[in-house]
Image 1: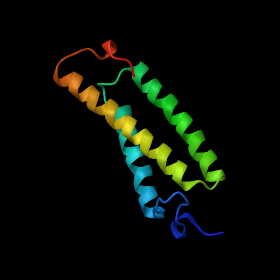
Image 2: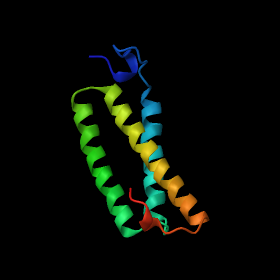
Image 3: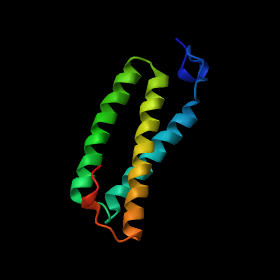
Image 4: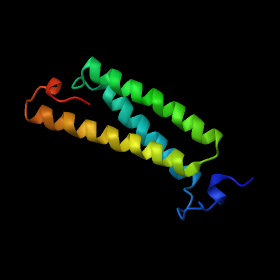
Length: 105
């Protein structure tokens, strides 16, 4: 069986290289570390992010087991997108001096 790097996805999406996938994983890790060390996030917000990370971990393991690179990448990018939105919203609320508990994740 070919590795993901050597395959072209049947729905027309070119396979990402292992390096590109590792970069997405690293980006997710950097975002997560920022949230965990950022005092702007409440404990409740951090718990929501932790729970989503737990779901993501199970999803990625599932798609890896099924050798479905397209869905693996989609779920990982979706998590990164979601984290960026939360970080941006938190930064914006901090700049405007608005309480975070007024907005739910």
